[in-house]
Length: 61
Image (cartoon, rainbow, N blue to C red; front, side, top):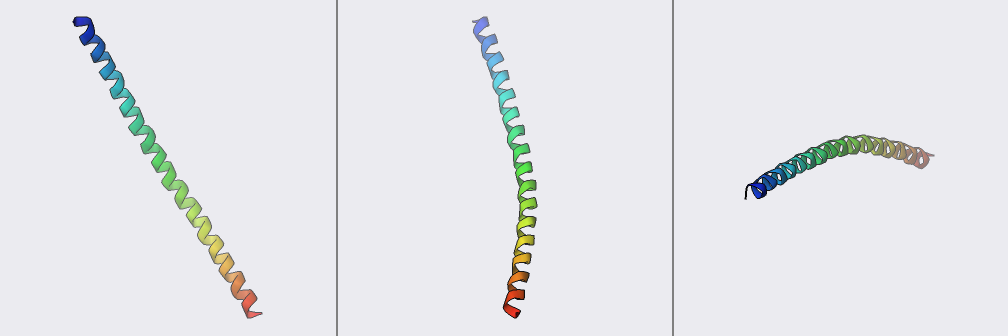
């Protein structure tokens, strides 16, 4: 019985480490995703401004 208890304790500890690692992984991944989204959103807004200015320029001509 003692061996089973120690094995279960060891497995519970391993699962706890796996859960902590998963939380850290997905937390860091979400932060990187937000940073990437902001970067590409700024780039997209810049392209929209360029496109709008080109369309205005062509419609004035």
